[in-house]
Image (cartoon, rainbow, N blue to C red; front, side, top):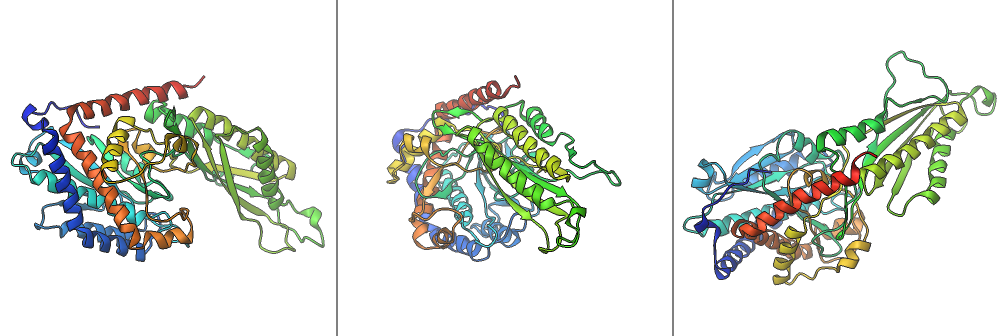
Length: 483
């Protein structure tokens, strides 16, 4: 988050009528650009690309800002920190040269899902970010003496897998930002939904030439490394139970069992069945569900289970996701899972290797102050938000925006796109590319741009956003300090 700068009083004060006129101008600009924005979204939707491979989408977005009139008005940096990330920036001339400008960023996502394409509507996320930025710029340009503000668009790849925002955090892309904005397609309108934290586990390879004893679980403490890595980077700031809903930490784990191949009919006793280990591990975790808390989530698949029925499998592989409302609880859950994996190896005589992925998705820290401003603007545009009870009791997923919410205050609302189809389905892919989704998408962009204008021209709002951000981080620390 950028430094707190005392802005000139005459630039911070604006009558309600003047501010509403600025919001109207932002909305008008978004409508004026509707055709270009729709074409941008369709170009991304029609050529879906997986995480870290979004080269065409990257090109479409960078060209969009490079060609935005007048020429070269946006400073565009392609390949910003990652090959398929970018940064586009606009500021009034005096703000561009001077220090202390308020820096507001709109985030774009544009990766797709395997086999399904844009079944999570990331083409619309990119469109919302671009549209909101255009609207905010137009509003500021209509002022004779605009305040020192930088409007930034960050292209953040690999949300579905890998965590591109986490890479960009490490690369410093979020340094000095004051507030970040993005919006995600859904089945309803909500200023906040509980996005869970996720931990991905991958294989921890054996050192070359090292032989592990049968049943011995090779765990140079991957789960513990995850735990302390979070503690070090964010001083143990983790997920909180908020009265706006409970998010969860997420981690992903790959488990690999090694056995011994043998002819399954002639001499099966010579083999060590790695598939049996995988099935036992799967069943161990299934049996564990009875003792799991309602807020815990465990889901996994067997990715590899052998090559032929008459060969005892010498290798098997599982992929699991673990989610819990806090880092402390996730540590308990993953320890139980670790015991289940080890037990399967011991029972079958296999060797097991476990590794967590490099990036863990944190929960989204909600900022009620910012959410309230967004809802107020959304209602002016006719948005009907779901009730707080529906938020509390609704489903939850995971996003790398959660990691962003630990380093800069922001908002990650959800918006209806004209369909009741569920995300990650073929039906949602079709809806995300439909013309019907455009009206809802641009309405959401208007609400984000209007909220950004509130942040700029209502100093007490920005102060409240910052104060709540610091308070929530302190709550996270208390929830997740090791016992």
